[in-house]
Length: 333
Image 1 (tube, rainbow, N blue to C red):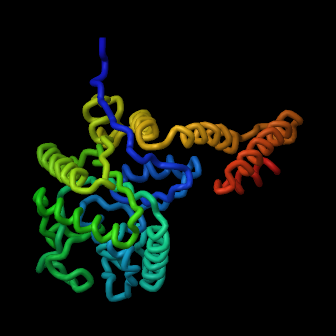
Image 2: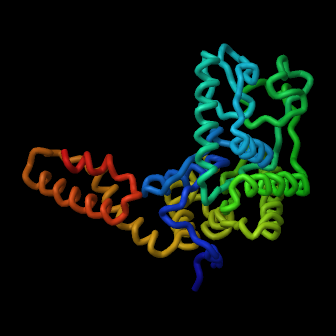
Image 3: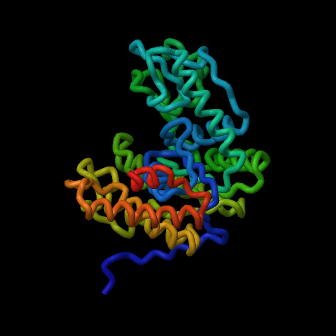
């Protein structure tokens, strides 16, 4: 008897290898994937603009990395004594505009350099709703009236017009973006996912309409570009797990068990066999690195450190591209 709806996930024709460079961007679910890959020492760079939800913001940001766009203080606006960018998450905001701009441009330059050598871009789309500045915005000049914003920064709702993007519009924007990215770096491959996080503030019915448009749009893109692929994170949570015990207390965000399940399926279908074996070795070392000894002066603990120092050293010699310096320092202590 089946207790879960089976799902067939096709392996990538060209899987992810440990030497690959992976840029991840999009909704908060992106960071679950990125953090998991980063922890086991994949070369990753996450959300250079911070968390982004809609496809227009994602495309605009990606193109800005290829152009190495340099932001100016005139691109910022002030709200409640804090300076913000309409194109960046609030983690970039601050009370000193010079610091805000410097932080934004440092991230831009890092993204520009990273995307030059990147092998993969993983894009997680969260919502098909777009927020645009309107005539009621006191100072729309940084973005311009009618322009899409990536983050509303808790500004008054009347400053924005909210629109559910049409599927054709999403497909067009994503297609143009991928074309530009491939001109900049022809070796790029893309993995699209749709976030299983429900945007209940939009309304349950509206959230489902939004997710449906994202899924339909991404499948159009996958059919157009052989470098583009779809990973069914949304379906794994919504259709396979399909139970509130796999959600956090807010009943919206998938919990640890759900995200771990999705990541396991991601590894199985998107990462090559030898890299998965290396991941297992590295997880053992990482768990040991996190171990906190109650009696660190004991002979047993010193022996534990010696054993894992030798394991880590051997792994570093075998795979010199791995960054294991923190682990070597810790086990050598």
